[in-house]
Image (cartoon, rainbow, N blue to C red; front, side, top):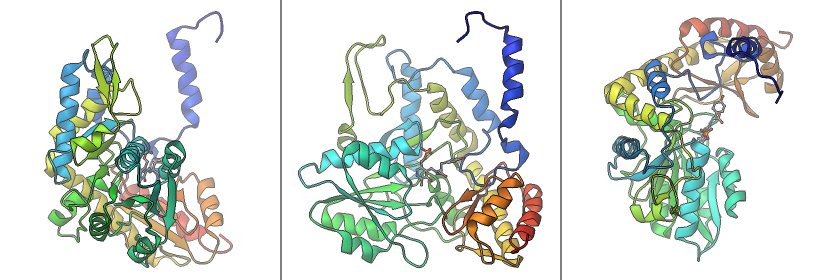
Length: 386
Ligand code: 0PR
């Protein structure tokens, strides 16, 4: 830090110039992210309440009460209005809290947790932080966790299973119903990672689409991650962790006796937490209602079908899987995926890149208008000499 300060105008001008290197959602170039531009209403709410710290609920009891209500709304979306939980910093923290509770609940049994090979890297982080052994098992032909492989991997030290409802790479939905039965049969914690799918899957049936069961309606499901800052249209940071029972959540509770707002407890990894993000989540759910989210999902899925149909027509690429959610995997057949990825990146397209395919996530900031120039580049660069 320099000794002399600069005027606000000078600092803002410097930021304006320097941030020109960042991509923007408005440019239509961000095709592979699970985060979208903030909804204008969420942004408005967020700006108004920047001083709220929901980590000290004694100072902000009204914000804390609204957080509880938001958790109840998320619970009702996931078939369990009585679920406990918190709005947290994102899917990483939510998954960490779930595995922390799972470890405490069955501490005497062992430390093995079975996850699909495509599980998000937050499980490896959680494994290292919590001293858990994370066992990756294979997938079936539809890129879903292979239930026979889970059975084969089970042993007496296994304490938890993770199923993903909307996988990071392809939006695949693991067989949660079978996992639920297995969890009950073997007395295991079942964590469902619906970080992305949690705001999409509940609307599929109403849109006349196949809707795999994935939530608390399945009796074996213990905890669910659902991220409002992904398809919930909240402002970052806004993930959420839901526990089926209060006693399960107790495992992650810590006492804090000295706060300005008075003695309290926390059930999150972070201490100081942005109440503004929590309020924006609540406000979006109040504002849109189920019908509003259903419309968002409908638009995103329409665009998904449009992109998938166009990809099928292009020589040199194929769909990596039939899309279930608003995620499309594009697999090159004539050049290596790294080559295609690099060519498209040089043209300014920001896609997700996985070992076998490129990922497009059809979020609300995208429309057919942005997809068109991308398809033209895709058709050109998917050719060997492109
Ligand atoms: N669970 C699943 C299934 C996820 O896909 C992700 C993140 C997480 C948990 C972790 O969520 P947080 O990042 O909120 O902690 N999925 C995105 C991904 O890895 C995260 C992301 C979003 C990355 C936007 C980049 C980006 O531009 O693709």
